[in-house]
Amino acid sequence: MGKGRAPCCDKTKVKRGPWSYDEDLKLISFINKYGHDNWRSLPERAGLLRCGKSCRLRWINYLRPDVKRGNFSVEEEETIIKLHQSIGSKYVLSYNEIKNVWHTHLKKRLSSNTNLNADHDEAATKGSLNREETSQESSPNASMSFGGSNIVSKEEKDVQIGQTSEYLQGYNKFARMLQEVDKRELLEIPFDVDPDMWSFINGSDSFQQPENSLATRAHQDSQEDEVDKWFKHLESGLGLEENDSQQQQHIDANNESSSLSLLESYKGPGTSLMKP
DNA sequence: AATAATCGCAACCGCCTATGT
DNA sequence: CACATAGGCGGTTGCGATTAT
Image 1 (tube, chains in turn red, brown, green):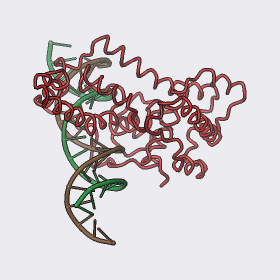
Image 2 (cartoon, rainbow, N blue to C red):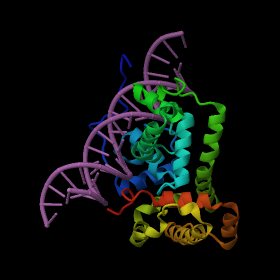
Image 3 (spheres, rainbow, N blue to C red):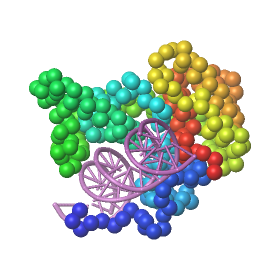
Image 4 (cartoon, rainbow, N blue to C red):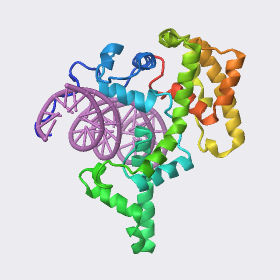
């Protein structure tokens, strides 16, 4: 501040607005092949007319294999509330979607709940939630509202790391699969993937996580069956089919959450992986 | 059926921190 | 130590979709 700083990119020369199908594919295939050691130079290297920050955001929030998407369960909502109580406005785990849920639903809900409580017991409104809300609103910089800095305690980080690891398992599985099969170059194939595959991906509602989908084991089982089918379809589309022993290894190695998060993330947001 | 109001989500912006030189 | 650069996060905005009137 003060002196200001050079913009991260020339905004007149970069494309803005919603990401297209082709851009998503370019970004996914480039990152899977070369990684993302340098976001600023990545768009140019990947042939994208996008700001590096925009690429990073797109990857982290929507395209990354370990991003879990879909409806939030009650449990997940409670987790968000608890985390927000304990660590405030620091959406370390899943960024935009959680952030949106917080801003559009939970904040409102908690606010109305505390107001209700206030009718019965004014003193109760001095509780932690209410304090958090008021401190956040009164502060010109919300990120400084909790502890005055972005420093997170070791305990808090452990919690975050533990929860993040669940999602990372999905990504790790994907990476392992790529290494095992040693067909990374095939990830460039999606530009020419069978159109039927995309219609399958985009059109199949059965892979959407229904509300409270985690509630019953039976539902999970049927979901996994469908996920399994979809996974096979994806693998065959990408030329990543496995032999029986490899398949068995994966079945043993994976827990359901990792495969679910992986698959759902590669299904991607409805608006981004739509066919043009 | 048309219009207004509201909701939900993707993307952008600005600032901060971490790291390298 | 000072500065520059890159990565990252939180808040906000814009717009399409949905619902209410």
